[in-house]
Amino acid sequence: MNLKYFDIKEEVAKAIKKNKPVVALESTIISHGMPYPRNIEVAKKLEETIRDRGVTPATIAIIDGIIKIGLNEKELEFMGTDKNILKASRMDLPIVIAKKSNAATTVAGTMIAANLAGIKVFVTGGIGGVHRHAQETFDISADLQELSKTNVAVVCAGPKAILDLSLTLEYLETFGVPLVGYQTDELPSFYSRKSGIKIPYRVDTAKEAALIMKAKWDLGLQGGVLITNPIPEEYSMNEEEIKSIINKAIEDSEKLGIKGKELTPFLLSRIKDLSKGESLQANIELVLNNAKVGAEIAKEFYNLSNF
Image (cartoon, rainbow, N blue to C red; front, side, top):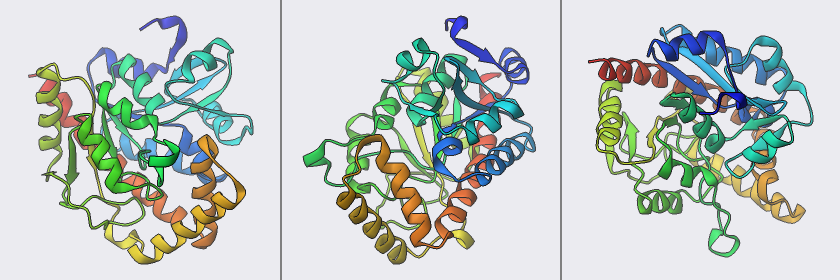
């Protein structure tokens, strides 16, 4: 890691140096995923949830071309309010850094930064994946490629429900990404616990997940581990209702010709409007639940790594 490109927050640096558990958090959810001021409230609550479990949170972003591993309150507010924040995935990182721009890191971007800093657990809401009609558009998120090459475990509530979930699973299998359900045999579909899609492996404890991570990397097998954690039952949206809302949002995006990096933020915003805010509350609750699970997995992995 070339330190001239990084600024590691003191509490995070101390935890990494002492080989204490740390959980990475992305910043796209702050800059592009939720409206102000809920985005700031949720970002702070996520960090608090992780700290309450004895783990150090590290929200990752790029400010003035510097990769920030951990944000202070002023930086967090900036990421949540500035209207010119870019989105940085793998392809964007060198350009954003060279131009000294400001960017929120996507799942892929956050994985890269976390891995370079020595952080092995990353919590997010949902990963990107294979978009619907990708066989014609080739619209496949870089998150999937990153999972195949970067040694970070990602805890999420499944792929975002706007995607083609079956094709996303096929892609992950092709590239050898271990996919496990946390206390579930069915792939969570972000807003809902249900998808109708079985997943190959299940873990019921944080220690089981940590053992899989350790075994993979001890064997020298490159790439991440995807741990899918369903939204809590009381916040899970009706599967058919949310499918109908998503289909309407996708139809609207196609009419407006919205594609590429603008597509996911548009769809999430449109789904929020069509669901009268229910999807936003579900999004908040699922990512907070992921933070709880991710913190426990980080502690278990720390214990395994130190003995």
